[in-house]
Length: 620
Image (cartoon, rainbow, N blue to C red):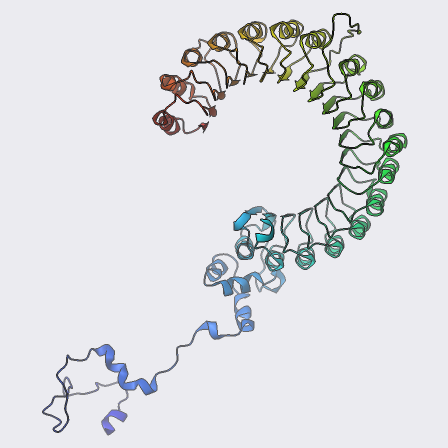
């Protein structure tokens, strides 16, 4: 036995050759026959001398932290982040100023996480992975409500590793609170744009932290954040002197105290203001009218507490000299008096949009036309008190700058009768005319517009059952000087091939886009006319019409070598597999093709088109 204990490992264990025991060598000891032991079994002789395997995992987090923070950025850190979630979390907790090696982060990268993909673990990975690749500059997180897996820990990871962050959007994240937002604010002072939507855990405390650290903040959006109130807005107004755009929506704790203070403090340098569905009164608009010297764009939506006096004071205060665009939706205080005051007080006003303003009538429109001499566009939607005299009276009295006029779903519009008398002073500046879903609008109104508007280039007449070929012809005859570029007649069921023939004959050289979707009287004759005369057209929509294979063949064999980029024939039952070769020929230039609900086009034809027209986006 002494030979065994004196064995050092440098010489053979048994110099005489192979050592083994046999039944004859040890009499009196029973050894059953068995196979010879493998060499690997030898350590069993030293089971008492085995040592425990050591691992870096047994080190405390403090030691691991010291090791990992000394790793260079790039592949080394990314490789270590893949070892385990534990290591990933440790790496993402290392702040930039705690790393031994410095790295330049300009914030060139952007990342977006939505739904189930938005988790703390992914945010940690983004924090580690983007630090050596230019730095994260833009992050958008769209959660899934109460199932969202993004918490303050995930925001903490971003805060530690992404000091170059400039744009942050947090949507629908109920688990995010002031703690996470405050950590972002302290570690990412370069933030310029912040969007908080449906984050009930964020309160005034978080907004105060942002105002204290993010001095470059220029764009702030707060939507449906029930915890944010007036104190947070005051803090932003006091400290964020670079703020240029503010959007507030559906925040029940925000009222006149916060909004009025913000507008009074920052109105001179704010350029864009959006106030939507807030518990404010005319006081806020009055303050805006007096102090909003820098405001150029204004959006007011659902301000039920604002009365007529609020709009009147806002306009007559004459403090918004730079206001160029105003959009008002569902505000009961917007009346003819308020509209006239805004038009006369905001002398640089160019764009006006009124939607669901039920107390605005034609009288207000005429007053606006006479006072806002620089007005370039007017859009009216669901303003049912406006009749045809008001709308056309506006066109007669508008200034020479008006370029676009739009009527959408205005039920008060009725067609002219033969005894109606209205001055037909030319409004030659208008280039775009839109009338959609106004049931009373007919040929007589269209004929009058033709006499007034001679320079139209973009015409959109949609869902007008009262418009026929005669009305469109009268409009076309008055638009010869410039030439129509875009024409949309979708849903005009009484328009026939005669209109398309006249259109292509008079404006074929300039027409680029033609939409005939839902015009049930349109046949192959219209497509043949377009193929023959409209050699500049690049967007053609004949969905839900009587167009068949014959029309597609005419397009493919056009002598003008059409440069069609978008073709829509959805719902055309007359188009079959016979058009496959013609569509393939057109596919040389097509970027978009709609063949949905074409029941006579087989799946094999669709597969062929998908394979050969690989550059084209096909809807089927």
